[in-house]
Length: 202
Image 1 (cartoon, rainbow, N blue to C red):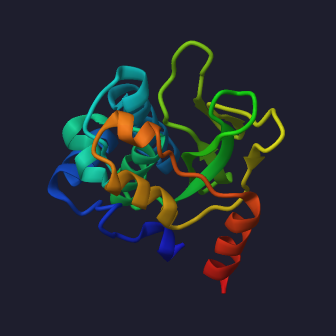
Image 2 (cartoon, rainbow, N blue to C red):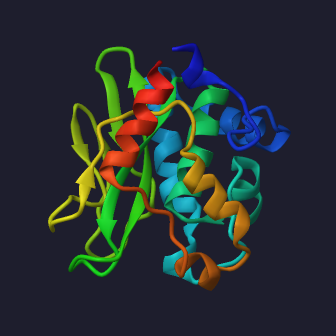
């Protein structure tokens, strides 16, 4: 589980503001599952999805997501991972490939998390932020994610990565505004994703 607890420039959980917020959330709870649920709910509800709320800047590293209180799904998953790792709870990154308009091409990745709960194992959660038609919850052992794959070309990746995909980080770091990123959302084919997963597992 060590790799699911690591610090890096994107999941910068040792940043003072991350540690402060992680401790504040955890202080009212006793078990890893309760802490994980509280962190999930806080990121889902208190950090605004940039697309839903038309907010800039584009954020990537966890401390910036916390600072600006906004981020796309990927960035929110980075913050949730940082808060959980700061509380010594293993957490990884998961992705779906979804149709942007719900009809087919073009596609983009959607990012969320998997948290390791001692009595359950890996449990996927989506702190993207709820709105009409989206109702993601923390109800283990049942998963309740924001989206399900429905049309050809969409994909449900089962991999749990210990760090965000490079294509996601590059997209977030190379675009400064909401409109720029919306025109260049990260995508990867199932075949390419499997090659990445195979390479990381070696």
